[in-house]
Length: 228
Figure 1: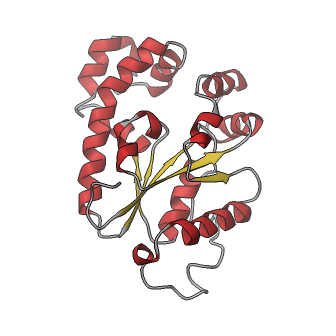
Figure 2: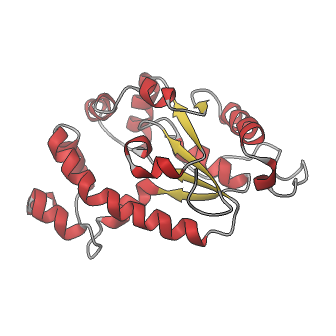
Figure 3: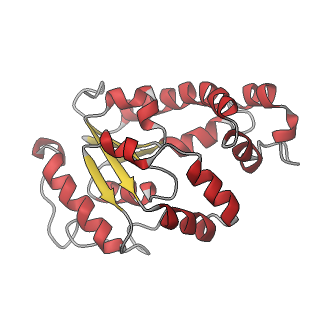
């Protein structure tokens, strides 16, 4: 159960390239307050942030780019090929992310909060969730999205996908599974249906006109985010 009084908390997770951010934006469109824990982890290691110096101390200055920022591409290649390095990174970053999530959740005015986190199930955040939503996409779709949207090489994309736990492990812990493989509209129908079925009416707020929240939003308009 959520530790934030008066809130219904959705934990949103899924492997890389499965479209978590799209689903989070859809839930925000339906009235939830979205927290992107993965983006918070990036901020936590920015130059001057609390995680910056511990990472430089743990991995060395070779992970820095010419401007002194941590080069996430270099760091990513290391940690996704070395499980011990990944655990070291997570020990540094996860507590900082949890602090930030708690700060934002306590101050949110919306009754529903969605926390997007690729490592949700491996972190203490999951204990604060009333339901767990998992996004799924076939591996070949994940790889194609990483190549197209993140400009990764196919080799790097395949390595990132293969380095993650089997999607079935997340699905086994899910309250809701969103198969994010077909059209934007298909994904929206799944999300809107799951919202109505799983989020208690008392937390949904007053019903909005059909012309507003129940119509399919446009990817270019209300929900302007890359798939994957």
